[in-house]
Length: 95
Image (cartoon, helix red, strand yellow):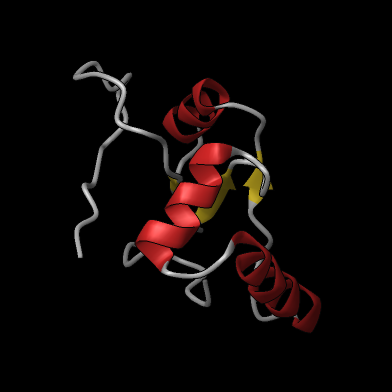
């Protein structure tokens, strides 16, 4: 969240689903181990203090995949749908 650029100096662009979306809730709780409202507070604090850039909110997983696949330096999360990743690199997050 505090890292603004990748190692190649390209800006990081974060895409997320709305806080009330089931996939966002699951990702927040099971992967980040925080509640969605806590994640919102962290983003807001970083954004308003000038230490970070707010994520771009998209309305669906399909929209998120499209945004990540067409935006340089983008990152986001979706449920694993199928092996056809639409030119998106998938990183499996494990604990």
